[in-house]
Length: 201
Ligand SMILES: NC(=O)c1ccc[n+]([C@@H]2O[C@H](COP(=O)([O-])OP(=O)(O)OC[C@H]3O[C@@H](n4cnc5c(N)ncnc54)[C@H](OP(=O)(O)O)[C@@H]3O)[C@@H](O)[C@H]2O)c1
Image (tube, rainbow, N blue to C red):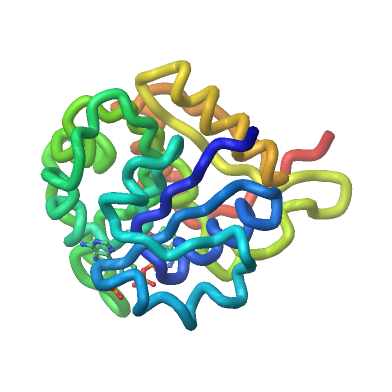
């Protein structure tokens, strides 16, 4: 049986990711900051496998994907007991948007390490955050290859679970190592941010 996918944030990234998982037959639970009814129109095109829920319900899925603005991350702390949960951090730590795109000053920490501090005990995997949503939502099969999604995290088993799911939706996972090292390449202003790679063969 396919793992359930909970997506917190139903905007550009949340809907792009939901579309891929729904197409591959995963049950998808998606939320925003309001009542689930507010998402009725937005999720219609994503198919029957996608259900609007509260964020607390989405957070209890087998794999939880954070697709909300950086400013919303602190609000997740008390949502559920995060201990042991597999959480994919797709956020970028922007505090302003176009045209200046400023990022929060996190000192020496990677942004996913800060997310880890808010979600105590969660098994964080950084993924789905490097590609512009208009590319992310496209077919990941390109020519003879598959679009790359980088994964970083400190829990090897969680990375394997997320990498398996990424493979099942047609992307090519590439493991960059730990949150402290790998996710810094992925995060906003990192060397791999916004790059669109295709893995051939
Ligand atoms: N856009 C991209 O191309 C892109 C690419 C890679 C990564 N990212 C990152 O992905 C994240 C989402 O970006 P986006 O472009 O999808 O943003 P977006 O289109 O503005 O959507 C944000 C979603 O998050 C919801 N949300 C806000 N605060 C929330 C909270 N406290 N609890 C639950 N849901 C909440 C919003 O719901 P409401 O309508 O209720 O506020 C909305 O559904 C950001 O961290 C961004 O930096 C974006």
